[in-house]
Length: 429
Image (cartoon, rainbow, N blue to C red; front, side):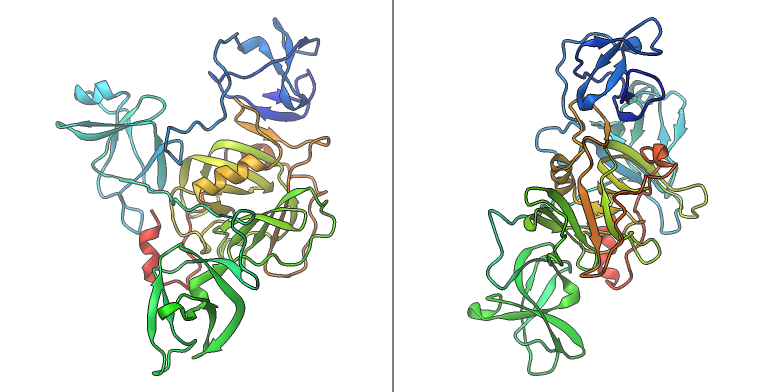
């Protein structure tokens, strides 16, 4: 652990995991740390060197990504039915060698759990075998690989929206276009927009056939305007100004009505993307917050009193801003732009990594987590529903359970809000 003072029990500044190189400064006097010395590290923190040793390796940013990868692990879950019953037992061996030798298994995988692996091996005799960080091996025949979304948001500096239009995305499979905002006989289908395709639209809603529509300039036949149902689209709405933000201050702005996130500086929007916030059963809290602590990788599981059983390994790029609620990457669904979570704000992996790299507290190389402190407060976060009034939580203390947050967090693997239909069932995995 990294402490604010060279003394056990002082405030925590962050965490460094075993076998991970990190940078140290001068050694200093302190309290505790018997048989060793304290050393200064980044973020004005201190570590006891009792369980550390010198290393020639340079610290690296965690999590480490393989070339071309968007997530740090191979993720998979046991195949099961909708009631959570496994299709078949899935044995786990202490090592790949013991699997090949037909030795007894150490245990087995369980339902409602996402697993992280570091290697996939193919052998004709056993098929695919997945190996985790501890070297344990699992036959892959009854595992279902997760396929994270490749979505990445829009740089509003390099690609600003046209005058009078808003940056938008399709969240339907696909979003169907009509030549007029109506389902009456005089309207025609004139095309479609692929799932998560970027576009621009007129944000003024139009009523027709009992539903709302948005006009999409130039998307129709021969460059004519076209129209899509509002529920099939999401767009960036900057909402009201946040008055006490400095012109050069970077902050995060989430609109849960549109399921969008904006990275902003002052009142300008730099980057926008889709998110998935909490469902009606598990709503995302609204208000103005600060990022309390950031975690490069962490597991997430249900609370003991939660009837929905789940456990999600190695969730990357986690940023807590209110008690157990955080921004984080999701690799177990691709339904961005739809409400899906247990209260957290899900992002596609590429978006999560990018936003994580911009916000404070900065996580130094080699560190797994970092906490805000008085001299380095966390990035401001606003979570709103359109233009509603919000409570300012920035000066409230985190809660007594914050030390548990890093290891016990909702997996956000809930069902969708219910207004999308069966066409989104295949986006769960």
